[in-house]
Amino acid sequence: MKEKIESIVSQLKNELEKDLNLVDLEALRVSYLGKNGKLTELMPLIKTLPNDEKPQFGKWINEAKAEMESLIAHKKNVLLTQQMNEKLANESIDVSLPGMNFKKGSLHPLTLVTNDLEDYFVGQGYKVAEGPELELDYYNFEMMNLGVNHPAREMHDSFYVTSNTLLRTHTSPIQARYMEKSKGDPIAIIAPGKTYRRDPDDRTHSHQFMQCEGLVIDKNISFANLKDTLLSLAKHLFGPERTIRLRPSYFPFTEPSVEVDVSYVDSDGNIGWIEVLGAGMVHPNVLQMGGYDPKIYSGFAFGIGIERIAILKYKIDDIRQFYTNDLRFLNQFKGVL
Ligand code: DAH
Image 1: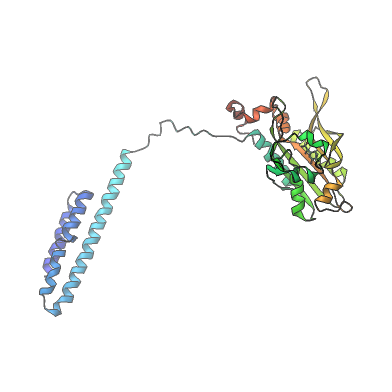
Image 2: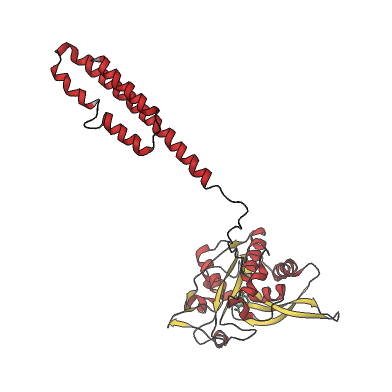
């Protein structure tokens, strides 16, 4: 019996020597180990053996089966590797072919300015805050000291969505939201974001634009702190030779309020001034509504027009360029960081 089994194993070994493909190999497996395979066919013989020989027979069969399975598996591996090598040889890459042209985008100039402002202020210990673009009248106006019939609301001719929600007209409501959240703790934040006003679009106006709000509240914050902050910012944005000029102005949420101009030298060598932002000392009403006692706390705030900064920095002649997705415009900012 043992010889019979051994001869089946050696038959298989001979077969495996031949030139086979994967299909032949599977057929071979079935013909030896399948339901009606050569080895399987021997199994019923166990019944014909005397009881004391049965375990030995079972052992031989199992050993033979294991050996045959491993021979077949080994051959299969060899064939698969061969197949893969042939495939690789046939599919070798032609490195002289032109590569695929992946179009690479670039950061939008408004994103460049926003990133720069964030880097700059975060470096000075400020946090970056956010607020919703669809804002409540309550935060957009009331908490910023613009009561229901305040005439300055007119400057913010607005997109109302319901009677008490609107697309925010400035980033200032983030001041109120952050004060509420801070529960009397000192604050130093900037808050960049999109803003909306019902303005007809032209070279210098857009119904959608971006601002970056700033708010600092602590004990003993003075106007000198504000001026120093703005001067350093102007130098960072436009160069160390620049200076600033503050003009008295009016905003309901600051008192005193200023408009800030940055100096430039024109082609004839004359000094000119360009307005870049509004700022001021936080109005006591705003502090009070935000949960800060104006007798103990003071603060300054500013609102930067991001498009204005980008227009000056990159010498852009029309604010609409930012929003029309013209690749000839956008591609000029490739590689600018
Ligand atoms: N919110 C003002 C605007 O949109 C800009 C502004 C001015 C913001 C003075 C401020 C500020 O925080 O102090 O016109």
